[in-house]
Length: 484
Image (cartoon, rainbow, N blue to C red; front, side, top):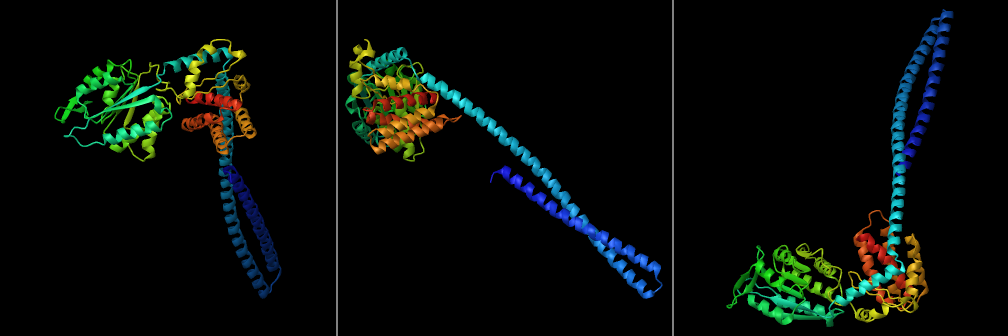
């Protein structure tokens, strides 16, 4: 029962009680009146008679009547006290009722304001997500230029050292896990994994010159002042300062995109290195073997699936948390805000990327008489390609200010096409999450990101359904605008 109904019921019940008490009070007053008349009549009888027995009888009558009158007066006083208390209670309940009504009205007005703000915000996002043909063409050209700059193959150089005078680390297991996860990834043929062991300081230069790596991965011990621990000629510890490492890496900034320090306390190194390259990963504290291995292997697995460095880093953190290891705050990602590589994957996402790259010249001509090519590059490196005018038409037809209409259209398309039931349910569930969260004043960005991931993962399975692909791409577009 709503609180306002509780107050109303309390007031009604108390008024019923007052009516009952008032009725009882009236009855007692009638008794007083009746007994008062009996006293008057008895006194008259006494004044008229000389019989002692009659006088005694009438005196008893007067005495009994006075006692009844006294009892009735007490009952009347008690009833009036109860009535007074109930009237005060009613006054308090009415005040509560008034406050509750105001609270409900204020809430209704606030909800209406929120609804209007959400509607205006959604309208703005939808408008911003729809591009005219010229803007679309320019975006396609820019996206393809991004693809052209992504290397078809990258090299990861795994540099390890575990001096015999230091505690033993499971570096071989880390390398094995990284290599196995890369082999399981979609773009495994675009990644080469090179390792050097028992590394001495000068070995670093030789390895960089030989392999020309895209990613340099240091694995081993680190110190609180930012030094890395390598080996001397006898296999004992050889400490190399952060300044020396910075000097080595800064000279390789044209080829090296990322330096990964999987060493304890290496965040100092990472912050320094980031000044000369695009990305650096370091550890803010001592990190356990298991956490270090899980984080690095899942990071490179994500890179192998065509994700950006930022998304791969988040996947590595998620892997640590899924294993229940309480060290997810230790890895740190650093990158330059002015870098052009932030929103690009390190490897070509898939075969369609190469195909689009080859179609560059065709795009520069009159695309409306033959092609509509929709390229969507984001953190996942997802690319959608269609050779059909219905792609752009479907996007344009979604120029609506109502998210519910767009969601409804997607669901109607799903009902009318032949598609695996599980894929349909996945799309429907994620659309409903977006529909719910995007209408909230403070949408939960984590829920939106998860729904976007789910929809993007479904795109390869619906590439033959162009209208559905276009609609889903459209709803992803303005959902992305919300979480930026």
